[in-house]
Image (cartoon, rainbow, N blue to C red; front, side):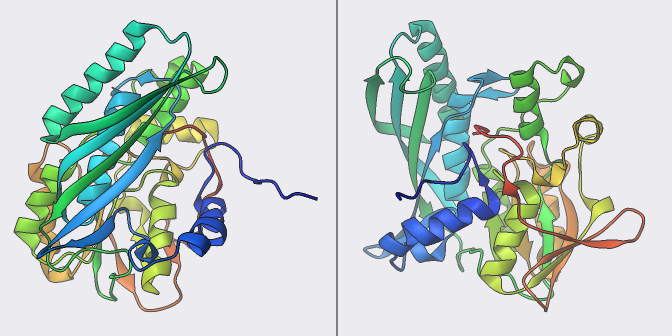
Length: 334
Protein backbone atom coordinates (compact mmCIF):
# COMPACT_ATOMS: atom_id res chain seq x y z
CA UNK A 1 0.00 0.00 0.00
CA UNK A 2 1.31 3.43 -0.92
CA UNK A 3 2.09 5.71 2.04
CA UNK A 4 0.41 9.09 2.31
CA UNK A 5 1.50 12.27 4.05
CA UNK A 6 -0.25 12.21 7.41
CA UNK A 7 -0.20 15.96 7.98
CA UNK A 8 -3.03 18.44 7.97
CA UNK A 9 -2.66 21.69 6.05
CA UNK A 10 -0.27 23.94 7.89
CA UNK A 11 0.97 21.34 10.37
CA UNK A 12 3.85 22.62 12.41
CA UNK A 13 5.98 21.53 15.32
CA UNK A 14 6.92 17.89 15.76
CA UNK A 15 5.00 16.60 12.73
CA UNK A 16 6.67 19.10 10.43
CA UNK A 17 10.08 18.31 11.94
CA UNK A 18 9.59 14.60 11.23
CA UNK A 19 8.64 15.28 7.61
CA UNK A 20 11.70 17.50 7.11
CA UNK A 21 14.10 15.04 8.74
CA UNK A 22 12.69 11.82 7.27
CA UNK A 23 12.14 13.05 3.72
CA UNK A 24 13.73 16.33 2.68
CA UNK A 25 16.86 16.39 4.83
CA UNK A 26 17.50 12.68 4.25
CA UNK A 27 17.68 13.23 0.49
CA UNK A 28 18.98 16.82 0.31
CA UNK A 29 21.52 16.62 3.16
CA UNK A 30 24.55 18.88 2.78
CA UNK A 31 26.58 21.11 5.15
CA UNK A 32 24.58 24.24 4.29
CA UNK A 33 21.14 22.69 4.78
CA UNK A 34 22.08 20.64 7.82
CA UNK A 35 22.60 23.73 9.99
CA UNK A 36 18.76 23.90 10.03
CA UNK A 37 18.60 27.63 10.77
CA UNK A 38 16.09 30.16 9.41
CA UNK A 39 18.45 30.86 6.50
CA UNK A 40 21.42 29.15 4.85
CA UNK A 41 24.94 30.48 5.41
CA UNK A 42 26.71 30.54 2.03
CA UNK A 43 30.39 31.37 1.35
CA UNK A 44 30.87 33.52 -1.75
CA UNK A 45 34.36 34.63 -2.61
CA UNK A 46 35.77 36.54 0.34
CA UNK A 47 32.32 37.22 1.78
CA UNK A 48 29.32 35.34 3.14
CA UNK A 49 25.64 35.47 2.23
CA UNK A 50 22.43 34.45 3.96
CA UNK A 51 19.69 32.94 1.79
CA UNK A 52 16.15 31.91 2.71
CA UNK A 53 12.95 30.99 0.90
CA UNK A 54 9.35 30.69 2.07
CA UNK A 55 5.89 30.19 0.59
CA UNK A 56 2.77 32.01 1.77
CA UNK A 57 -0.73 30.53 1.62
CA UNK A 58 -2.48 32.52 4.35
CA UNK A 59 -6.24 32.82 4.33
CA UNK A 60 -7.80 35.36 4.38
CA UNK A 61 -5.55 37.32 2.05
CA UNK A 62 -6.11 40.55 4.02
CA UNK A 63 -6.35 40.98 7.79
CA UNK A 64 -5.85 43.75 10.36
CA UNK A 65 -2.18 44.67 10.37
CA UNK A 66 -1.23 43.11 7.06
CA UNK A 67 -1.89 40.89 4.07
CA UNK A 68 -0.35 37.97 2.22
CA UNK A 69 1.76 40.59 0.42
CA UNK A 70 3.27 42.12 3.55
CA UNK A 71 3.83 38.65 5.03
CA UNK A 72 5.69 37.53 1.90
CA UNK A 73 8.16 40.40 2.34
CA UNK A 74 8.41 40.49 6.12
CA UNK A 75 8.72 36.73 6.56
CA UNK A 76 11.68 36.35 4.23
CA UNK A 77 13.36 39.58 5.34
CA UNK A 78 13.14 38.34 8.92
CA UNK A 79 14.48 34.86 8.14
CA UNK A 80 17.53 36.37 6.43
CA UNK A 81 18.00 38.78 9.34
CA UNK A 82 18.02 35.92 11.86
CA UNK A 83 21.42 34.86 10.52
CA UNK A 84 22.83 38.26 11.45
CA UNK A 85 22.56 39.44 7.86
CA UNK A 86 21.47 42.63 6.14
CA UNK A 87 18.73 41.64 3.64
CA UNK A 88 19.26 43.16 0.19
CA UNK A 89 17.27 41.43 -2.56
CA UNK A 90 14.11 39.34 -2.91
CA UNK A 91 12.65 37.17 -5.64
CA UNK A 92 8.90 36.79 -5.88
CA UNK A 93 6.79 34.05 -7.49
CA UNK A 94 2.98 34.13 -7.72
CA UNK A 95 0.66 31.17 -8.26
CA UNK A 96 -2.71 32.71 -9.11
CA UNK A 97 -6.05 30.97 -9.44
CA UNK A 98 -7.92 31.58 -12.68
CA UNK A 99 -10.61 34.21 -12.14
CA UNK A 100 -8.88 36.16 -9.36
CA UNK A 101 -10.02 39.80 -9.62
CA UNK A 102 -7.26 42.03 -10.97
CA UNK A 103 -7.91 44.59 -8.22
CA UNK A 104 -7.16 41.90 -5.60
CA UNK A 105 -3.85 41.07 -7.26
CA UNK A 106 -2.91 44.73 -7.58
CA UNK A 107 -3.72 45.38 -3.92
CA UNK A 108 -1.42 42.53 -2.86
CA UNK A 109 1.37 43.69 -5.19
CA UNK A 110 1.02 47.25 -3.86
CA UNK A 111 1.30 45.94 -0.29
CA UNK A 112 4.45 44.03 -1.23
CA UNK A 113 6.02 47.08 -2.86
CA UNK A 114 5.33 49.27 0.17
CA UNK A 115 6.65 46.59 2.55
CA UNK A 116 9.83 46.19 0.50
CA UNK A 117 10.47 49.95 0.49
CA UNK A 118 9.94 50.12 4.26
CA UNK A 119 12.36 47.22 4.80
CA UNK A 120 14.91 48.75 2.37
CA UNK A 121 15.03 45.68 0.12
CA UNK A 122 14.40 45.33 -3.60
CA UNK A 123 12.32 42.75 -5.45
CA UNK A 124 14.57 42.02 -8.42
CA UNK A 125 13.21 38.91 -10.16
CA UNK A 126 10.10 36.78 -10.16
CA UNK A 127 7.65 34.48 -11.88
CA UNK A 128 3.89 34.25 -12.39
CA UNK A 129 1.81 31.15 -13.03
CA UNK A 130 -1.97 31.04 -13.49
CA UNK A 131 -3.62 27.71 -12.64
CA UNK A 132 -7.13 26.50 -13.35
CA UNK A 133 -9.96 27.36 -10.99
CA UNK A 134 -9.83 25.15 -7.89
CA UNK A 135 -6.12 24.26 -8.24
CA UNK A 136 -5.15 26.79 -5.54
CA UNK A 137 -7.02 29.04 -3.15
CA UNK A 138 -6.95 32.39 -4.98
CA UNK A 139 -3.23 33.14 -4.57
CA UNK A 140 0.01 31.64 -3.22
CA UNK A 141 3.30 33.56 -3.06
CA UNK A 142 6.89 32.38 -2.74
CA UNK A 143 9.72 34.75 -1.88
CA UNK A 144 13.45 34.09 -1.66
CA UNK A 145 15.83 36.55 -0.04
CA UNK A 146 19.57 37.06 0.09
CA UNK A 147 21.59 39.33 2.32
CA UNK A 148 25.10 40.14 3.46
CA UNK A 149 26.28 38.58 6.72
CA UNK A 150 27.34 41.34 9.12
CA UNK A 151 27.43 39.38 12.42
CA UNK A 152 30.61 37.77 13.67
CA UNK A 153 30.15 35.12 14.94
CA UNK A 154 27.04 34.18 12.96
CA UNK A 155 24.00 33.38 15.18
CA UNK A 156 22.71 29.82 14.97
CA UNK A 157 20.15 27.67 16.74
CA UNK A 158 23.03 25.41 17.77
CA UNK A 159 24.94 28.15 19.63
CA UNK A 160 22.91 28.58 22.86
CA UNK A 161 25.14 28.11 25.92
CA UNK A 162 24.42 27.56 29.64
CA UNK A 163 24.30 30.93 31.37
CA UNK A 164 22.89 32.73 28.31
CA UNK A 165 19.85 34.95 28.70
CA UNK A 166 16.67 34.62 26.57
CA UNK A 167 14.94 37.76 25.25
CA UNK A 168 11.84 38.29 23.13
CA UNK A 169 11.29 41.50 21.21
CA UNK A 170 7.64 42.01 22.15
CA UNK A 171 4.16 40.64 22.87
CA UNK A 172 3.35 37.20 21.50
CA UNK A 173 0.40 35.60 19.71
CA UNK A 174 -1.06 38.62 17.94
CA UNK A 175 -0.74 37.31 14.39
CA UNK A 176 -2.15 33.85 15.02
CA UNK A 177 -5.19 35.13 16.87
CA UNK A 178 -5.83 37.90 14.33
CA UNK A 179 -5.94 35.46 11.41
CA UNK A 180 -8.23 33.12 13.35
CA UNK A 181 -10.58 36.00 14.22
CA UNK A 182 -10.83 37.12 10.60
CA UNK A 183 -11.26 33.62 9.25
CA UNK A 184 -13.95 32.60 11.70
CA UNK A 185 -15.72 35.97 11.97
CA UNK A 186 -15.04 36.31 15.72
CA UNK A 187 -16.28 39.84 16.31
CA UNK A 188 -15.30 39.82 19.99
CA UNK A 189 -11.64 39.80 18.85
CA UNK A 190 -11.96 42.99 16.83
CA UNK A 191 -9.20 44.71 18.82
CA UNK A 192 -6.40 42.26 17.92
CA UNK A 193 -4.02 43.00 15.05
CA UNK A 194 -1.19 41.12 13.35
CA UNK A 195 2.34 42.03 14.40
CA UNK A 196 3.68 41.53 10.84
CA UNK A 197 6.79 43.72 10.56
CA UNK A 198 10.36 43.77 9.17
CA UNK A 199 12.97 43.16 11.87
CA UNK A 200 16.16 43.88 9.93
CA UNK A 201 16.67 47.36 11.38
CA UNK A 202 16.10 46.05 14.92
CA UNK A 203 18.56 43.20 14.38
CA UNK A 204 21.16 45.71 13.19
CA UNK A 205 20.65 47.74 16.37
CA UNK A 206 21.04 44.62 18.54
CA UNK A 207 24.23 43.57 16.78
CA UNK A 208 25.74 47.03 17.17
CA UNK A 209 24.80 47.25 20.84
CA UNK A 210 25.47 43.73 22.07
CA UNK A 211 28.21 42.38 19.84
CA UNK A 212 28.20 38.60 20.18
CA UNK A 213 24.75 37.03 19.78
CA UNK A 214 24.46 33.28 20.04
CA UNK A 215 20.93 32.70 18.64
CA UNK A 216 18.39 34.76 16.68
CA UNK A 217 15.11 33.15 15.64
CA UNK A 218 11.64 34.37 14.73
CA UNK A 219 8.89 32.31 16.41
CA UNK A 220 6.47 31.92 13.49
CA UNK A 221 4.49 28.67 13.12
CA UNK A 222 4.44 26.83 16.44
CA UNK A 223 5.13 30.04 18.33
CA UNK A 224 7.54 30.68 21.18
CA UNK A 225 7.28 27.23 22.77
CA UNK A 226 8.03 25.25 19.61
CA UNK A 227 10.87 27.55 18.53
CA UNK A 228 12.56 27.34 21.94
CA UNK A 229 12.28 23.55 21.79
CA UNK A 230 13.99 23.55 18.40
CA UNK A 231 16.82 25.68 19.82
CA UNK A 232 17.14 23.46 22.90
CA UNK A 233 17.46 20.38 20.71
CA UNK A 234 19.92 21.99 18.29
CA UNK A 235 22.14 23.24 21.12
CA UNK A 236 21.69 20.33 23.54
CA UNK A 237 20.68 22.57 26.45
CA UNK A 238 17.74 23.21 28.74
CA UNK A 239 15.84 26.50 28.57
CA UNK A 240 14.00 27.95 31.58
CA UNK A 241 11.43 30.70 31.06
CA UNK A 242 9.20 32.70 33.41
CA UNK A 243 5.49 32.97 32.59
CA UNK A 244 5.19 36.33 34.36
CA UNK A 245 7.98 37.79 32.24
CA UNK A 246 6.49 36.88 28.84
CA UNK A 247 4.72 39.87 27.23
CA UNK A 248 1.22 39.01 25.97
CA UNK A 249 -1.46 41.59 25.20
CA UNK A 250 -4.51 41.28 27.40
CA UNK A 251 -6.79 40.97 24.35
CA UNK A 252 -4.75 37.96 23.18
CA UNK A 253 -4.63 36.43 26.64
CA UNK A 254 -8.40 36.70 27.13
CA UNK A 255 -9.16 35.58 23.57
CA UNK A 256 -6.98 32.49 23.97
CA UNK A 257 -8.59 31.70 27.32
CA UNK A 258 -12.05 31.84 25.75
CA UNK A 259 -11.05 29.70 22.74
CA UNK A 260 -8.93 27.18 24.62
CA UNK A 261 -5.69 28.21 22.90
CA UNK A 262 -2.21 28.69 24.34
CA UNK A 263 -0.60 31.98 23.20
CA UNK A 264 2.85 30.43 23.58
CA UNK A 265 2.08 28.24 20.54
CA UNK A 266 0.49 30.94 18.36
CA UNK A 267 2.31 32.25 15.29
CA UNK A 268 4.13 35.59 15.30
CA UNK A 269 5.28 37.51 12.23
CA UNK A 270 7.11 40.48 13.75
CA UNK A 271 8.93 39.16 16.79
CA UNK A 272 12.33 37.60 17.43
CA UNK A 273 14.00 35.51 20.10
CA UNK A 274 17.52 36.60 21.02
CA UNK A 275 19.82 34.41 23.13
CA UNK A 276 23.15 35.88 24.17
CA UNK A 277 25.62 36.12 27.08
CA UNK A 278 24.17 37.64 30.25
CA UNK A 279 26.74 40.44 30.17
CA UNK A 280 25.20 41.78 26.94
CA UNK A 281 21.53 41.26 27.81
CA UNK A 282 20.69 44.77 29.02
CA UNK A 283 22.38 46.39 26.00
CA UNK A 284 20.41 44.10 23.66
CA UNK A 285 17.17 44.84 25.49
CA UNK A 286 17.73 48.60 25.22
CA UNK A 287 18.48 48.24 21.49
CA UNK A 288 15.26 46.29 20.95
CA UNK A 289 13.24 48.94 22.74
CA UNK A 290 14.69 51.67 20.51
CA UNK A 291 12.87 50.07 17.56
CA UNK A 292 9.15 50.76 17.03
CA UNK A 293 8.73 46.96 16.77
CA UNK A 294 10.52 46.22 20.05
CA UNK A 295 9.06 48.58 22.63
CA UNK A 296 7.61 45.68 24.65
CA UNK A 297 10.82 43.61 24.59
CA UNK A 298 11.58 41.60 27.72
CA UNK A 299 14.04 39.18 29.28
CA UNK A 300 12.05 35.98 29.78
CA UNK A 301 14.50 33.31 30.88
CA UNK A 302 17.89 31.71 30.63
CA UNK A 303 19.75 28.72 29.23
CA UNK A 304 20.74 25.94 31.63
CA UNK A 305 22.73 22.73 31.49
CA UNK A 306 20.60 19.62 31.23
CA UNK A 307 18.26 17.70 28.96
CA UNK A 308 17.21 19.55 25.77
CA UNK A 309 13.80 20.69 26.86
CA UNK A 310 11.90 23.87 27.75
CA UNK A 311 10.59 24.40 31.27
CA UNK A 312 8.11 27.10 32.28
CA UNK A 313 7.82 28.56 35.78
CA UNK A 314 4.12 29.43 36.02
CA UNK A 315 2.56 32.55 37.47
CA UNK A 316 1.72 30.67 40.69
CA UNK A 317 5.22 29.24 41.09
CA UNK A 318 4.71 25.77 39.63
CA UNK A 319 6.86 24.29 36.88
CA UNK A 320 5.88 22.41 33.75
CA UNK A 321 7.46 21.24 30.56
CA UNK A 322 6.58 23.02 27.32
CA UNK A 323 6.69 20.51 24.49
CA UNK A 324 6.65 21.14 20.77
CA UNK A 325 3.36 21.85 19.03
CA UNK A 326 1.65 18.63 17.96
CA UNK A 327 -0.24 19.29 14.73
CA UNK A 328 -1.34 22.90 14.22
CA UNK A 329 -3.53 25.18 16.30
CA UNK A 330 -4.49 26.92 13.07
CA UNK A 331 -3.54 25.97 9.48
CA UNK A 332 -2.79 28.39 6.61
CA UNK A 333 -1.38 30.95 9.06
CA UNK A 334 1.30 32.38 6.79
